[in-house]
Image (cartoon, rainbow, N blue to C red; front, side, top):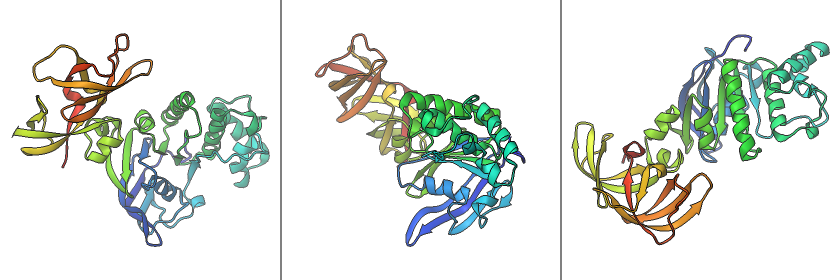
Length: 353
């Protein structure tokens, strides 16, 4: 897609300070060419500042930023061959197709050629025939696609997205994120994508960089982050997770025998030693049954909510309140019901101390 092909993005010990406040602290990572990498984390963690550092809208206090093998640390935004799709879309309200043609026009392309480039990119994002419409005549999803077309029209080496779906409703968010992922793959684009929505990050990414307190908490594939969180923060932030105290009774090789309340089970030790530890327990890995079973944990329903395709329960068990997702909706449990809990091993993770 890019005139020069997709480029890698590399941060080497990059920091950004505003006065005495550290916004990005000694961050290093690589985005491989043709991949979509999401910067994920809560508000104030440094993810948007990191994206703006890639774009050249902020300058690094220290470290190096490499794009396509070229050191761009001290180059301006216009010299970096990247394009950015902003959260607000930032469309000119008085322009129709000129919103997309604006970049080529200010770069010196004749008006006729700039409009031809704009029409090509509008067709690419599914908006052929919408060239004459003003932003006020477009839905939120269509405005988002115009913003994407405007970012693509100069065929950048790297495409950046800053919370691109936050202004859309839930159903439209799902559709537009699928469109973005399809475009990224079809056009072999290098994309850095910022969001605070963990479901969105898991759905679109080749890799996810989780940030906390201006630094990288963990980097990996969506599956690695979900199934093997490196810290309590990542386990709690990536998907819902019950964090409960357990006792590691014994460790043999890479396996541990753990005790939670009256339930005993074996699972990967992940470096844990005998003694007190923490367990990440996914809500959909907890099974509720009226019948007692070996190593089952007795519990009582404190709260029940019907959400159409599943039930959500709060269950008091093992001295803790557990959040449980149950796909069985035809005969739901009621508040006060006694139940027995068993656990799917692939939804349980010993967490580092």
